[in-house]
Amino acid sequence: MTATIFLQAAAPTIFGINPQILMFGLIAIVFYFFMIRPQMKKAKDQKKYVEELKKGDKVITTAGIHGKIYEVAETTFLIEVENGGRIRFSKSAISLEESRALNTPAVVK
Image (cartoon, rainbow, N blue to C red; front, side, top):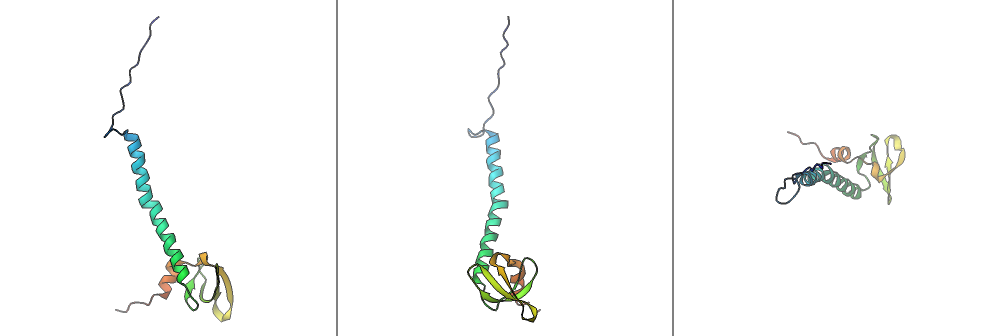
């Protein structure tokens, strides 16, 4: 009876770290800086913007409804639309980019 012995070479290391583990770590870091961090910043900006809104500010909702804030409650806005109609919206329904562009005065050149 013959026995076969297979010798396996040790995996190469870079500074004592397995390259596969190093690659997974680098992918996680890149994922954080290009995906997670910008989303967290955008959510923070949205929350700050909504908290600063007050009665009389013009807004656009994520559904595309234009109006003026008539009343501010804890978690909702009462928005006045054309012809005096009023609709209650959740604060999360306000579009940051569209509303900010609406309230920013146009630059005349």
